[in-house]
Length: 245
Length: 245
Image (cartoon, rainbow over all chains, first blue to last red):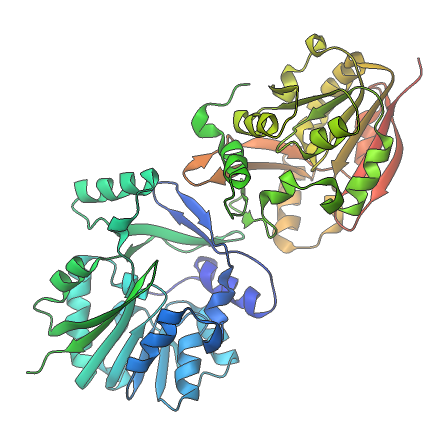
């Protein structure tokens, strides 16, 4: 998948924030539900000391060569690179990758998750922060990509991914949406969204939020196993290890 | 015009803010340009001392019995009521009027600007703050409503209205939009927008921004004349007086 320039709403938003704009990220769901982030997208650029506690904690589990999937503004890749890791940052957004490079990330590439392959070499850790487990999009695609991730990683391969257990929330609009998903044979937390920035909009894409039970079911048979979770009020980080063969 | 509950995105947003929510107002233009307010809609509720300087200045020109058109969260009506004026606050949004009432505005009514008539009595001052000159919607509708406002006001009738000279901005997306407007026989600053909040959206409506020259042209022949302007970096307030007969 390749984004046309007018589809890179997310990247152009990141560029504007990196250039000093004060703005809020607008995300639209396919049922018409729309929201603007409260804190603004500058979190995507935040230095380690300003990250939420569970984000900082999760970094303890990073080892070896790292692939940062959905690198966005590059905060994770930059932190790990500064810690001495060999890091490759990938994102489908050209604007995001431009920001990564301008911030000094040495290896940042425009690659969609479904186009990741062995050409990038072998990794010890794959990071999917900022709810980027969501990039797996659906149960079936997650299973397929997890099997591929097993081929892209060393024997001590590890995935550190953030997601959200949507079953906790009781907001009627969200409850309705989850029910609609289930009725359509989708996972409850399989949201279809797009990012809008000024007159740009990303394509609609599926973004998958899973509870721990759903996560275990997805991992089953893919060569990966849930090692631990690091919880917060809102999201949780899953440390997922490669099963010994 | 009457809003259905699911069309009262603006009012529900105001209610949420009044109830303590931290959020940003999302406004979508009919060319797909979307924005979220930087400061949040709590400005709609701000006490007088926190208003921008030109807003505070404009209040000096208020006299007598007041009609606040597009009262929103009621900050203007509340301030004037506290200053001892007899104030009627009107807004097309039931949620906004609910907030006005909960804040203690004694006479707050759900009325669209085109439905204003002599049943509310005679006013000395009509206030249209927060860019609410925009509610005039178009050149033709502005002229029609201004003539009606002349009938709703006393001999010393005055309109204090805020608007914006859009010709100043050079943002390419906005320049494009103004050109498109002109090509369609609309005023450059006649934007068609809607407010979105969660899964609610207002109907699309025309909102008219005018420079001083356009304003004079609109006033011409309506019985109103521009008395003075109070400028700011962004918008300006027009003090418009009834012509002597």
